[in-house]
Image (cartoon, rainbow, N blue to C red; front, side, top):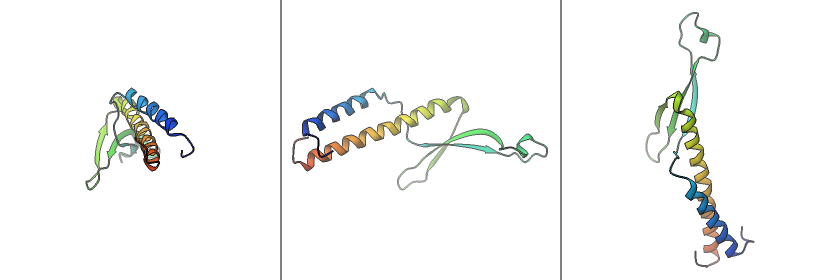
Length: 111
């Protein structure tokens, strides 16, 4: 990163900001878990398989608070996965912008 000119860094930062502008607020922080449960009924097909499911849940961790867990209906899972993926992409872009800004600040140049 430090081999690029400041102008190149600013240009890259602007490209990243433009990418952020394409994210229209459809993101959510959290992780999705998939689970299968055995019901315990004698003779049920789940007895010898992986269990009933899949069931999906989302866990969201907060600093200094208990994690929150929410059930995700099966018909919503594709959309929720998309939102979580978009959040991770958003995070990567923001971190790249921060790296660029730190490099420009190290050079004692105007952001």
